[in-house]
Image 1 (cartoon, rainbow, N blue to C red):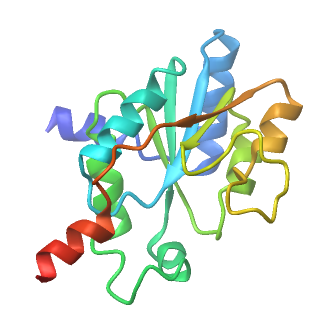
Image 2 (cartoon, rainbow, N blue to C red; image 1 turned 90 degrees about the vertical axis):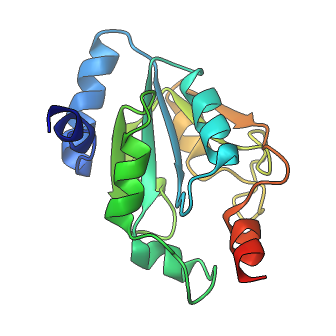
Length: 171
């Protein structure tokens, strides 16, 4: 059970994540943050997360709670997997260092508290977008850039999405 215990130790509340991040940053380690619901983990997710991890030394994932996913309007049947199941699966990835659940509609407050060095989203977002009402705007980018951090967009793997997978299963 040692391995499972090590995986579960990656799941931390926000206040603990902040303490850990400050220690990492004190050791000059570059902290990368990304977020999402990661409902049914697929090749696109793993590729995106691996490339995100390559942007620094430590990768933190802000994971939407079940309630937060439901408010996104992805459908009555979403999320398929509960938040603790999704968190455990993500934490099992060797390049993921921490998972923090957030219940807000956006990860803005979590990003403000963690204050990562690098903020990453998929290429369907634009790191240069400054209009916070734009669908291309990366939530938290203004705050990360204000403290000297960087914001990056990672190319998406075409043909992979949880919605597409669910549609194939239903057929």
